[in-house]
Length: 98
Image 1: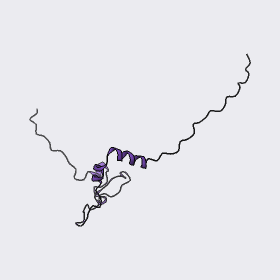
Image 2: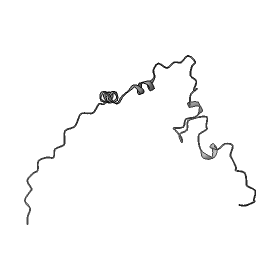
Image 3: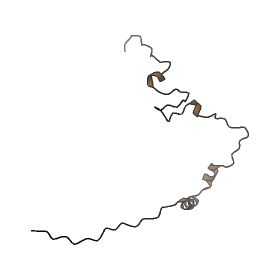
Image 4: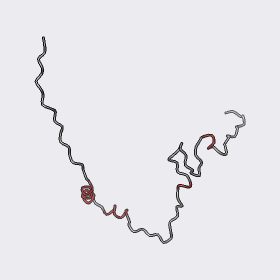
């Protein structure tokens, strides 16, 4: 190892100017259309009087393989089968000259 002093890394205070990224506040950009910024994420607060009306985990635990199979058959909708394509009847070959 060298005893030379190590240089400090150069960190830009605003990297968006160099990387051409949109700002982290979430303003939409055509370059990054799927970006979700701070303004797009919502508040994240649940009201104090909020109550769950259902419990999906309990439903999952109560299901057995038989009930799952029956429910799958109820929900399964297949398109009608198409007829098997039939090739046209062969025509007699035209005579060829030897």
